[in-house]
Length: 390
Image 1 (cartoon, rainbow, N blue to C red):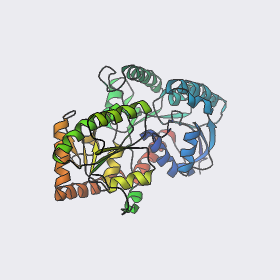
Image 2: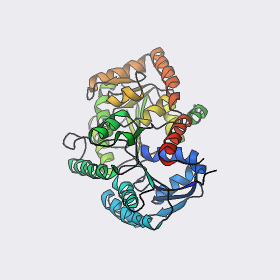
Image 3: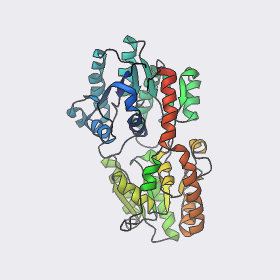
Image 4: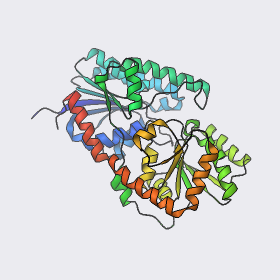
């Protein structure tokens, strides 16, 4: 039997603080929670919140390398710089066979890149799930968008040295191939959902009921400001319609959202609930009629998959990636056409039969993304590039 491999995981861009986890963070926890026994020494570079998330996922016998708590008191960019410098002590670790970077943010990329320079035989697996759009047209703060785009360009330059680049859709994979990445290093492995969890999640009778729900980080790219315009049109035909917005985020963005809701006289129709634990959040979704998701950027759309598993129909903007991931199982509307999206929501709110049929079909379709199958595919990728012993 082969000796088990030692692995370093860079979960170094973890930034929870009430916002929930990124798709890359969740994917790491789900996959390696199931594959922990395939490795010997397991090192994770992260912060205190990241450690808590790993422990909560059931990953045990982990050798943590925790960044100082004071780093998280700075803004994101400064914190990432300090975490990166701290993570460079990974060079002291010997006999590491595998590197795994959970995101393309530089605190996850740069330490792996430098380690790879000095340990050429170590196999580096790098996740790239999303390509930043042009900062000039991206929703949100232009300065932040400019920095994000060019930091990603820097990361992608370094990532070309990785042995395997994991994407979650063909759009990203084709983009990287077009930028000169070795096509033989590019693989697609989508996120998944825990079907058993959703099957076991009963409908609590005492849960507050909303007509529609969204679960997303409070960010302009998630379309949270679009929701105000959409819901203003929904209540013209359904004055009592109630929308719940679940998700944490920057306080300034939350305050701007609340101000727009107030100006639009929608304080009795839109409720900003903030970050909620999974059970509470998914109970609200399961007891709603429609899941509204006007996000402008998605690599996969894990919230959509979770809503489908809850048995709730989804209405969203028509992003190209959805055609690949969800095919025709969700209702897609031309991006920024708030009038039509509002009409689709009202249609589902008023037609119980149509809503039930769409939800039933979606619930059957989403079974293809069960974590069991996704993990099996991922294990084959690990073996192909890293020869991981079980």
